[in-house]
Length: 150
Image (cartoon, rainbow, N blue to C red; front, side, top):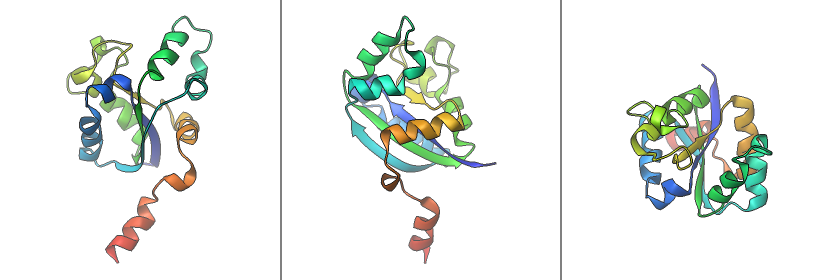
């Protein structure tokens, strides 16, 4: 399995409901490594770039309005097949269809307020990570562990 990095956002509803620790804990328990984390308020420009694939769709404006309304927590997780693993752990976008035990199945209240976002593919993950993090803001776990253990 390839080691991948993926972006996860705890959306405004998750931050406001104090679910950040639970989301972080779930990924840590699965063995993923947290390599970047920041609390930020997305401005409109960043939101539009992040959701560019949805520009022109009926829900685009409400999506941008929601994600910019309050702080989000942006995280980069690393591990074997991290993109697919995170997507599985999050559950279906619509919490009505999310399996019990998934983040959305346990915490989300609606398709619009579904607590988390995760990259949908390895290429998209690279693009999304670059929107939120500079390379120097991410931890290199392999070299960090070598230093810690020596």
